[in-house]
Length: 207
Image 1 (cartoon, rainbow, N blue to C red):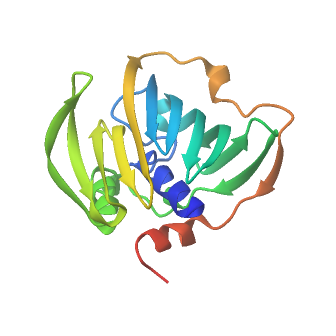
Image 2 (image 1 turned 180 degrees about the vertical axis):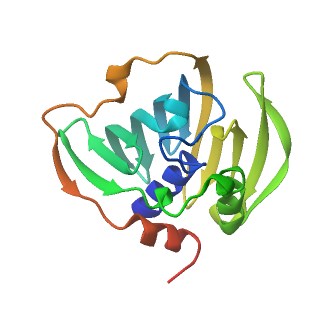
């Protein structure tokens, strides 16, 4: 369950695949703050630059489920073809290659996000505003969820994969980003991560 959810969130925040010269998002740089609710409660803050080629997501949440409760403080950094997932409480993490980076041409970029959503059973159902930004609304029946996309950035997500998990943007700032927020912290012990391609196959019902 945890691996499937991690893959789902990665897909959500890697909506358009990129190389250095490609535009992953529709805006060059910014900071978005989210409120997390449902089985998890807390905050997420995303910093991105170079049209999303570099991105850092800081998460502080408490998971409550079936009488169980756990605090987490994590950092996920995307540097092009490399993904770092870091537990800031233990200074440990995993490092893996982003499979979404491979086999992408300039022509693909306009359509690859919608193709991925459709492969996951997604259907565009209309448009709605989030913080004054007009978003495409996608319903993803396989994940029992919906996501609101603006400039290829999810501003709101609702997922129910056995437990309800929601996030909604509460602040959007476009413009320059503190570069130190995008760097991997020193003193982290990394191990090689699992096969993200296989996790994505599970999400789509593959073998």
